[in-house]
Each structure stands twice: as C-alpha cells, then as structure tokens.
Image 1: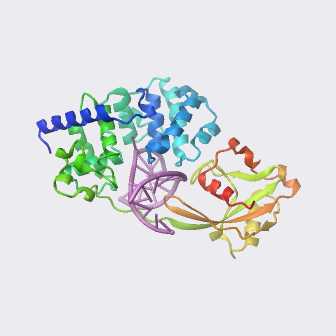
Image 2 (image 1 turned 45 degrees about the vertical axis):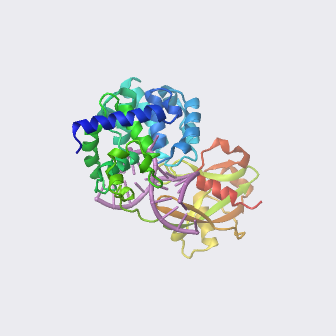
Image 3 (image 1 turned 90 degrees about the horizontal axis):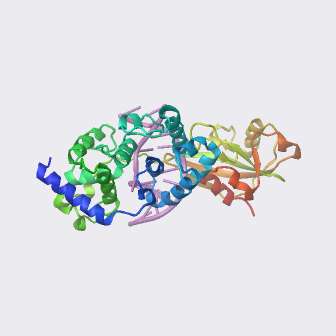
Length: 356
DNA sequence: AAACCGTGGAG
DNA sequence: TCTCCAAGGTT
C-alpha cells in the first residue's frame, strides 16, 4: 500500500486532471439524484455513447421520480427499447415507486438504504451516494477494477465475486474524502481513456507515475479476469402470421429473456418431434387457438447472439384466417404502427427478414 | 458461486 | 467472422 504522502499526491493529480479534462456528459450538468439514478441504470454494462440519446429521451419523457412512478409500464419499456437488459427498466420504475411509497419522495443518502431499491447493487449505490450526496463511498465498476488492478498490480481474478472486497478495502484508503463523487468519476474517465481495456496509453496517463503495471511493463496483464462461456445455439421457428390487420405479435412472459416485450410467436425446435414445419404448425395452433397454414418460403436463417444464447431462427410465414383476428391471444400490429409496442432488437432482425 | 440477462462497437 | 467487453444486478 502507498504511504500517506503518495495517496495525497495521487488524489491531487487525478482530480486536477479531471477538473481540466472531464467528459461533458448530459447527466453531469447537475447532481440531481434522479438524473444520477437514470444514467447509472442505463450505464450498467452499456457504453456511454450508446446511453446518451436514450438518457435524453427518457428524462424528457419522465423528468422526475414522480413522473416515472406514475408512467405506464409500456411507456417505460418503449423508452428502453433497443438498450437491452430490460429488467433494468422495470427495476428503475420499481425503484421510483419505492422512493415515493417508502420515502415520500425524499431520497435516502446511505448506500445501505439505496441498495434496498430495485436494480441498485453495490456499484450503483456507491455511485449515487458519492455523486449526489457526497458520501465517501467507492463506486467499483469495471473501470475501477481495471484502473486499480493496474495501479497496484493486483493479481486477484475480478470475475470472482469475493474479489470485490479486496478492491473495496483498497479504494477506501485512496478515495478523496473531500470529493468522493468526483474521485469516482475521475477513475471512470481514466478507465475510459488512458487506462482503457483494449487500447490503453499508459505512457501519457496523468497518473503514469503511480501505475505499477506500466512501471513493470505489464499493463495488459491486468486486470486478471477469467473468461466466460460461449453462447449456446438455440434453434427456433419464428412465425410471421399476417392478416389485413397487420402481423401477430405476442407478449413474452414476465420473467426470463426479453420479459414483457413483443415478438412474433416462437416455437422451440428442440421440443419438436419430429422437427418439421408441420409440427411447428401444430405447436402454434396450440398456442394461438386456431389452425394456421404455414409456408416455408426458404427465407435465410436469422441469427441473434445474446450473452449466453445464440438464437437460430427459421422464419416461417402464414396468412391468418379471417376469424382469427379477434380470437388469438396477442396483438395485430401494422408495421408502420410499431410505436405502440416495445420490441427487442432480435425482433427487428426478423422484420428485416420478411419477404418484400 | 455461478448462471442468467441485450446490445453495439472495436479489433 | 469472431471475440471481447462496456458506469452490474438478481437469483
């Protein structure tokens, strides 16, 4: 561990660099806790560049905790459409409702209380507490793991949950107690620039003098992180049922992948015996309650890769019998009226695969 | 502890 | 094309 003088020099150097070079981001215009909350939820596992337009639209549509708590869930999901990890959107609205119901709209300031809110874990609680409320708490995200792993050549595997405690103890000694929020954000900006994962520039880093991995020529050896498993292929039939009222969309279950979003009906091919279009037609009939004549126009296989699954979808098309329109569970939606429902990116790929 | 949960960009 | 990964949380 560094001596006290070195710690103070590090804080001074880091914050001076941050003051002169911090990124100009829409959620940095003030320290409003609601703004911090929305941005932090969106930024979980998501890049800054992707989040910016979503953040702007979301705050415009739902400018306060109360507005979010009162909004229809469908509007919240639509605002999140395309951003991924959709449980974050439902958790965000749930947290807003908790703030109104449990706290009367008055924010708690401690990480212990903040972590009781839906979707807020140790990182996000630390970020909100330090940025919005000046609490001296670390905000340990991927950037903090990488930056401190390199500064101190920490050999622990950051993929292991128990490793967080190692970094927590370390960062609590280094964090600037006078400016904890700026300190945490400065670490993130550093991790997004000079100390990035793939293309770092440690030589010109403002804290190069403190970077043990750079001093010893081992920058890319840190952080130590074990690899994830590769996505498992999952075969489906995706069925585009057409009618004069548009295409049939069904809402996915409220738990699991793409919960509550709207898609073409899917039939898991692994459960079909034998795996034929005729069997898919029977499975669809059981689902929507009416017979549907499927065609296989020989459309290309549509692939979409998630974190741990790769969906391989054979697209089938069908024309619905007229009586089906007010019979099947689901919604008939014209393709020029998709603003009415939230659909995932995988569904947008299916739409692009439809015959013209 | 380990599996689950999306998407887009970069190399 | 393929792999990694980016301001993680929940179960």
